[in-house]
Length: 616
Image 1 (cartoon, one colour):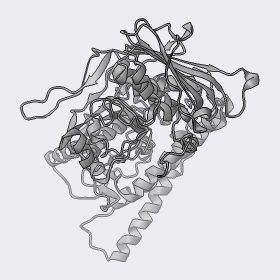
Image 2 (cartoon, rainbow, N blue to C red):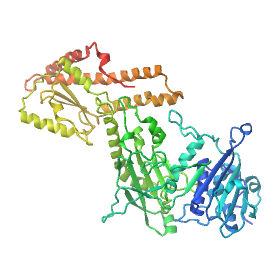
Image 3 (cartoon, one colour):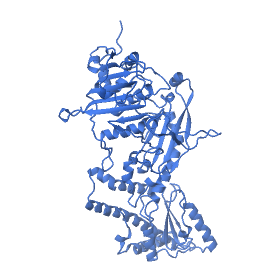
Image 4 (spheres, rainbow, N blue to C red):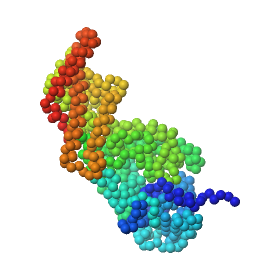
């Protein structure tokens, strides 16, 4: 005697196997591509009549028909047995567990029917997996000869396979709506989103071009990723519409957007040697295999901002779903298994993260290192692999983010230099009008010394191709400059009074300015037109838009007042002769008195409310 290892009731537990309908469907597509070597796959969903629907049961039927090599009688029998696979533990085929065909289906429905025909076979073979029948302890009936109804065979000529799901009971509700997003850019139609997800997951198979690794040079270094013609294009249709590829790197052309510009930058590929896990080593006979990492920065056309940090290209961005491109696409043998902020190599911090694209491609020989489950949904890198990826990727992503953020800031109105900052020009103009800070006391420099000092400052603040005009540092009055390179534990403010003016340098790495930036960033996010419309579920009225404009203007006024406060301090410091000896208390009192007077002068302004201009 012995103990039955697999109770029929376990099938009921498998209905909570963690598959969404998309993931379960991908198991069928994987079989068509990898086992069936199909060129064409037709997917169709149908819905119950409205009168038949309930809160859990929306779909009536789902089928996928392919023109692959088909299955003979014996292979068809294996396909419905959980744990049976013609490629079990394979390192070449995507499937290796013998699990997904039935396990995925059980999370969605109660009846699975399969028709299949090979080129050498004259007849169609048919088998069905009836959950009620099998869970009662009965055996799966053997395959029989049975032709499929004609509605399933439109794409099939000599050979192929048809898988049909019906009697849905546990699938999530699923809408027959092709719109991927609503007016505010949020998730809308389930059918449209399924098509988009499949286009991204299988982009390497269905696109005319495939982003590929270049040949390494003599030193083993790989250059920039390149798109090459796809020599084995597959076609997937969903309810009669062709699934189009979506590339998070935005290197291949999306049908309908063929004239879109190329990425701003394509990084050199990172190809890492990763040790195989002992279990994978045993089945692959490999000690090491390679992980390929690709990274791009989207074209600057999409990375625009106006003064309110709203992207003027938002409508076009939403059409291309760029606003949903926040995450790293992880592919296993070219097929995406995860699209998220994992594997924890970078924590998303803002909307700028949608403007860089990244993919990690690894072979199945590294399954254990990426913790690939039998459902092939998601990844979880082991600690050593996570640290290895992080050490190589974080700096590259940080560099991309730095360029993106800089360009977004630069694209604001000419009056702004940094994101989330009211332009300093209004403050400089006010100081110029009042004459505050025009004649600082200090050592007299020769013109040659001034020229050299101005050039040093211009070089210091010129970066990312943006040149700071050295003449700015020779203008009279109070001038402001932001510095992103100072140390966080350094002075939060640097004042230069020796060029005949007062130059106020903000240390943006200092906690004070970092916190200030965080506060203003959050305010900008909360008050963005996109966020408010998403919250309300509708577009803003003209009156509401005007209120939002006034709100943003008041926020901008606080930035202006900060410039007034700190610029007045700089001017006061410049009024004190550093060569005149005074006791400490007297110097501080003099500084405070002058600061108070200067601040009163620049803020006692009848036109205060008109100084800062804010575009909606």
